[in-house]
Each structure stands twice: as structure tokens, then as C-alpha cells.
Length: 482
Image (cartoon, rainbow, N blue to C red; front, side):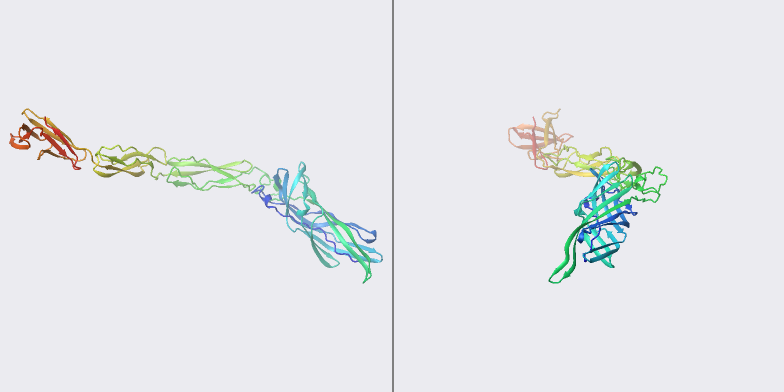
């Protein structure tokens, strides 16, 4: 009786990308099950109603499920079956029908993972989780030596894979069912037919039981789930300082607003999980040494601290935030310049000064403002002052007695130091004493020079006793000598 080969159990599981994001940085070391027990049950319909129903025990293998304690999830824990190699003890199947018979001897039967699979285990009682893996996610491969020939194949379960993970009893069980359909032919005569020509349904049911061995990363004899610090050998389980933090090297900076002080080194020495690092540096440092405390906090809210000294040697100049607008004037001053605004990176307000003269020359003069901070650093900014002289000189002609008709002539101008002073066509000195008499004739005439002080004596026409003064910008002023 000829029968197609039976395809036995093989499995593989795939790590879904979403699972890796559940707990970044967590310990991904797997639990290992290398002392497997269980059996493979073969149930198969065969002709003549002599159905097969027999079992063969698990003879060896290994399973790896990671992480060892799973990722915490809202509805249980997430695990990944990443490795599975299972072998079964040799067995034989012999059947006969209508005088035809066949024996199939399975001398080697083994299965291995095709790809990994991630699954969610739901809690059924404290520490115990029920496993259900959709059959569509479970991919199988088997290899067997049958009657001396190698037979291999890929299959998927006909039912969802089920099992339990018991973290109390430290056991894992899995049950995988595969549907089979075998065609039987025997006693065939060409052009006539076969005495046996039919299909038979069946199932292969693998039940696997394994005892969990948790990893021991530090080799101290304490399994990681029970170890208070899985990455540091600590057989006595004395408290271990965690996390570790090392502050950056001490620094000297040129500004009180220096914001980059280096990067602290922080490590969760026990679990390798993320560590949050902060420092207490204020927004502005003080001139001189500043102590900065770096603090590392791990996922268990344990904290460690280290200090760094940052010394400020202030060599940073102040900064002008604003400078008064340019000034335009009709005379030479003094000018109303306004005040700039300057700030400094260190505490205190910079002192302000400028080089403005008491009065300005006609044209444009650049005024330089200087801001000086407490450390003597300076910064400069400029403002322009433009004078367009439109103001006439002031002129006075005052009685100077005791001689009758005597006057003192004075002229002043904001832009011109010596405006030109005249009486008619005659140029006078500033502050000069003169004598004026009105006569019937028009014009201005010099009559003579009187006395020791050489007072000049003028005759002028009626209403012509007028003193004029002209500045360098040709602005003119006058005064009448009464």
C-alpha cells in the first residue's frame, strides 16, 4: 500500500516591529527551555478502517522566548518566540489492507523555526499567562528520515497555537495541531483501476512542555528576574549604587550666559534602561567659579549626582540693544542726543559715555558711545549729529558813557567764533568802543579817532546807526545804536 509522506511538526515565529517599541532599552535576554518533554500524536485515517493513533515522545530540543519576563502591556505581556528546535523519538507505522501492506520507519524526526513570531500572553491568574498565537502567524518546517530517505516540508497549523507561560512554576506549554490528508493507492491494474484508491484525513498534534531557565547575565548564580542588579555580579544581593553618573570636565568660559557645559555620562548599571540626566545651572552664571550639579534618574526613580566647576572669566563685551537716532540741528549746540540701551551677559548694567563736544561744527559729526561692563569689557556704537547753520549771530550796541554818544559793540554766534561786525562799510572789533553822532547827511563816515583808547568817531545819517554781524554760514544779525 503506497502512501504519500506525512509532514510532521515544525514552527517559527517573527519579531513584529511594534514589539520592539514597547519598552526601548529593556533587557531583551530570553528565557531558555532546553529540557523539553511532551509528545507527538499521529492520528490518521487509513483504508480498511484500521486507523492510525499512536504517539512518540519528545527526545530533545530548545526553545527561546524573549524577553525573559516579557514586556508589560495593557492586556498582559508581550513575548517573542525567537528560536525552537524540537526532535522526536524514532517510530514506525505499519498498516495492511486487502493483502497490501507498508511500513514507514521514521529514524530521525526534527523541527526548527522558520521565522520568529511575537504574541501577547493574557493573564489567567497571578504569574500565569495564557498563550494564543493565530495560525496564520505560525510557520512550520520539518525534516525527517523515512525508510532511509530525507523528507522535508513547510506547513502551517490548522488551529491557533495555544499554551501557557507560568512564571510561578517556571514552565511553558505549547500545543500545535496540523491537519493532514493522505491519498492511498494499492492493487492498481492499468486501464482497470486500483483495489485501494482513496483519501484519508488526519492530524499531527505536538504537545511540548519545558522548564524555564532565566538568564544570569552577570554570572553570580542569581537569575536575572530575581537579581537586584542583573549586570553586576552580586551573589549576596547587597544594594548596588545605580545609576552611575559622571559630570563633564571642569571648564572655563568667557560668558556668564554660556549654555553648553559638555555632556554627562550616565548609565543604568543594573538594567541598562534609559537614564534621564539634568543639571541645575541657572540661566546666567556668576563671574568666577560656579558649581553645577548633574543628576541622573533611572527608570526606578533612583538618583545619583556628580558636580562640575564652570569658571567664568568675563571677556565678553556688552551689547548695544539700541542707539539714539541721528540728530539734525539748525545751530551748533549743545545737542540733545538721547541715551542708548546696552546690556551685559553678566550681572549689572554697563556704564555709558560718549565723546560728544560741547558744541558741534557745521556739517556731520560722528559721536561714539562706549558701554563698559563691570569687568572692564567695552563695546562701541555711533550716532551722527548734522548741523545746518540757520541761526543769525546775536548783536548788541550798548551805551558806554561817560562820553556822550559812546557805545560798546558786541556780537556772538553758536557756530562761528568771530562773526564779522560792521557799521556801514567799516569792520569793527568785537567789544570795540565807538562814538556815533547822527547828522543830516546820509551814509556812515569816520570823522576821527579820539583819546588814548582810540575810540573811533562816526557820523551817520538818520536811522543808519545800525551794527551788523555775519557768521561763516552768511547768516546776519543787527542792532540799532540808540
